[in-house]
Image (cartoon, rainbow, N blue to C red; front, side, top):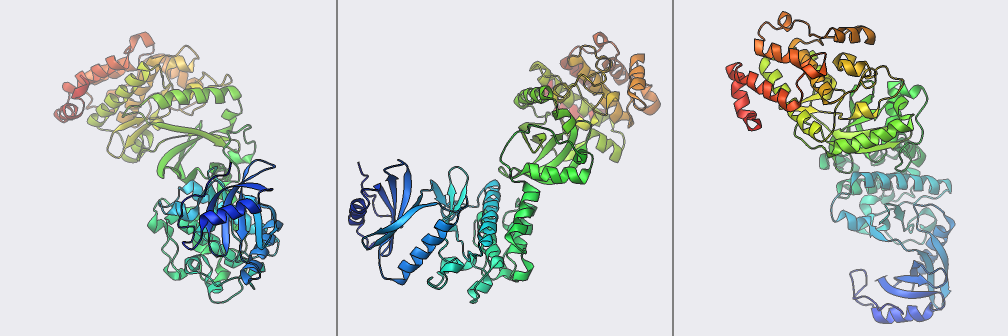
Length: 590
C-alpha cells in the first residue's frame, strides 16, 4: 500500500499541488517502485522516497519536471557525472531515464540529515568534523584524478548518515556543468573560493577552499566570512579546536590559491599522518620496530593510532609500563591523561586480558583521592587507557622541583592516601605499585592515586619478583613483592610509607643500585635513620614510619584504617598548624 503524501513542508513550494504530484509519480513509476512520500518539490524538480519493487529497499527518486529547458540539460549533465563516479563519499546512482516528459534518476536514499540542518543545533562534535574532513579530502582526490573540479560544496549538499558516514549529494556546479549552470545563490558564496566568485573557472586549489569552508562551518557552527582576511580563526570560536584542524583551515582558506595545499592528496596525507585511516579496533599484534625506542617515531605512530578520538597535546612522563600523554578527548572536549602501554607488554594475550579485567575493576572505584579511569582503547598495535588529568604533578616531580615536604604536607599526603587505600581495599583492589610517580598532587594540594591494579595486570612470569621490578621503581615495593612471595593490601601500606619517607627527605630509603642490592637493603628490615635527614620529626611519627615499613607484614599496620587512625592521632599531638589543618579538613574521618 502506498503512503499518503505528507503535509506541505518548507521543502515543498507553496504553488505545488503535492497530492497531484504524488499521484502522478505513483502512476508513472508503478512498474519500478512504490512511491512512499514526497520529500521536496519545486516548479522544476521533485524528490521522493520510494521502495524498489525488485530489491525491496528504500531509494531516492529524483525527477526533473520541465523538458526542453536549460535546467533539464543541467540536470542530465549532473546525472551523467554522478553515475560516472564511484566513491563512498558520493551518492550512488542506480539507474536513470525518461518517463514521458519527466527525466529521473534513482539513487541511494540517505538516512540522516544534512550538515546544514545539523549545524542549526550548533557546532558538530570534533570526531565528526574530522570524519567529514577525511571524506571530503578523499573525495576531492578521487574526483581530481578524473580531471574534474567540484567548484562548490555547501552544507545542505553534505549529508550525515546515521551510521556516521558523510555523503556529498550534489555536483551541479562541477566543471563539466559550468556552461549550463545557473549563477551562484547567496547561500553558496561563503563556500566558494574567492577566485571563482571573481569569475575564474576554478581548479583543484579552489576545491580545497570549498572543502575548508565546509570543515570550518562544521567545526564552528558558522560559515566563514566572505573575505579570507576577515575569517575568524576557529580556535577563537571553539577553544578546543584541534591544532591540526586549525593548521588545515589556515591553509585551505587562504585567499591566495598558491598558499593552499598543492593538492587534495597532500591534505589527505596530512590528515592520515596525524589521525590514521583506520576504524576503531583493539590491536591484534604489537608493533615490533624501532618505533618503540625512538620517541619521535613513537609519537608519530601514536598520533595516527589515536585517530579521531584524541588530540595529542604533549608527553607527561614515561616509565616501565609505557608513556603518559596529555590528550584532548575530541568527543567530550576535555583534557585527559592517556597511558600507552609498552608494546612488549601487549605482546602477551594473557597480559592484555588481565589488563582489561583490572581496568574494569579500577573504573568502578570512585573516590576523591583516586584518579578516575575513563576508557580503554587501542589501534595500530598500541593499547592504552585514559584517566582523569590531574593538573599539578606527581610526588616525584614536585619533590625534585620544590624539595622535601613540610610535616603538615606529609601528614595530608598520608591521610588522603590512606583514605583512598581504605576505600580500594574494601572493594578488593590492591594497588601493588605505589610509588611517587603514581601519587599525583593537584594544584589545590589534594592527593590523587593513579594506576590501581596495573602492576598485577601487567605482571609477566619472566619478570624478576613480579609486579614492580620492571617498573623502574623496585625501591618502593614491599620485600615480599620483590621476592615473589604472596602479596596483599599490607604491601600498599609499606609502599606508601616509603613514599612518605621520600616526601620528607627527598630520597628513597632503599634506592640505588641493582634490584638485587635493593632487595638486600629491604631485607634488613628497618628504615634508615629519619632524624638524620629531618631533625624536626616527632618521636610519634618516627615510630609510625618504623611500623609502616616493617619487614614482616604481620608487624605492620594491618589495615589502611588502622594506619590512618594512628596518623590522625599523631597529628593531634603534632604542631598547632597541622592540628588546625586536620580539624578543618579531616575531622569527618574520625
